[in-house]
Image (tube, rainbow, N blue to C red; front, side, top):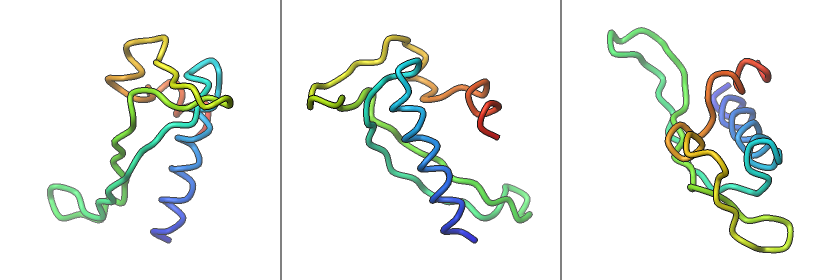
Length: 83
């Protein structure tokens, strides 16, 4: 099950990065999985650190058009569209 959480969340990040409305480039990232919450309840989730931009189809670096992209990576409105 843990591998599915990583697989689908990482695919979602890549899709957002490739979407020209968000960035239009392939981003880099790494993730850390947490399986327990602060009160020791089972709470499976992944935190990601992403690059502040990405590489487009011709190999050029693309800087985000929106400053929120850098700070929040992807906001909840985007998540709501996927999930």
